[in-house]
Image (cartoon, rainbow, N blue to C red; front, side):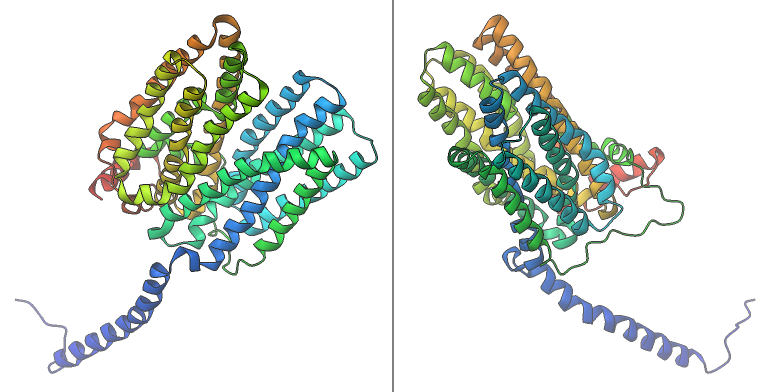
Length: 464
């Protein structure tokens, strides 16, 4: 026999109270729904916070590329040593890749806008003072090295911070579109910065660095137009935000783990510096003039810019699995063609096709990373990704130069085919072949999960 604890006649009252509570609970939800819908439906071009970030980063990227081309020109003009110019370039690349790890950690611990502004201001002062020294004819190889490495350190810290900020400023449905727009900025700066820097250097040696300083100053001012707070979540009790957590999260997420293996191998085989070195050496070995070699590099470089312009529409129309599979296997096929075709212009066209895939797959990969990783861990995971993708590039450049000196261009392109082919194998995994849109994988790997949670996270991602 069950004894009721409810007084007679109170059932109707309780039911009415429950309905009133439900009604009160629904009202805030109904009030929030239009606001959330409006936020989700607002076109990316009307998202002033994101556009302020994008424009700021565009000026910073252009300033960086303008100065980058001027460092070797200044070293060659002042010392005549191509070896020293190459050493400075390698030191910049290594510094940026190493500093991306602590940069990602800082991005998860402090206000991201403030961190980007600090990096910009340091470069404003560094390049401004360097310009004054050049005007006063007080340059020294050690000073050039210090300025170049210092700027690269700021780049390593600010890069993961700027990418991590995207998730704070755009809704999940626009992450892919936002990362695709980012690729336009990068490749436009890559195409526009070197000629600007070279032209300014011809007028006065200090001008490229002075203009870069001004560019970073403009970038800093534009960051002030971001109205939305960019502070990260507070650390919950017992939570750790160690630097190694970015690598652990990356290793626990099967999709990101497979794709980063392919990206590392592809960067080793087809890094821009390495491919350009192979094209230049091949052109010289076939008696091409400097002007013809420059035209060959321009043809190859156009592929990246075109890819950045079409990245958004292509990602919208083509399934992610098809994009990754096609992009992965374009590499080895292109390398085989490079090893067997005659003439120089076809080499440039083939390399352009390889570079065409870069902005598309980069935007898509970053969209998956932004969706799968919680905001409070974005910086550390991006730092880990940048380190792993960038650290493979110097290995590829060194290998290309060594193989070319020992065996010539055919064996260089053959080695590219082998490396890129092995790197493409992870894309044949069922996880990649059944890959859905990025927004279906939102935060499938929460920060702080333990290895025991991996199976449940994997199953949740597959179910989605």
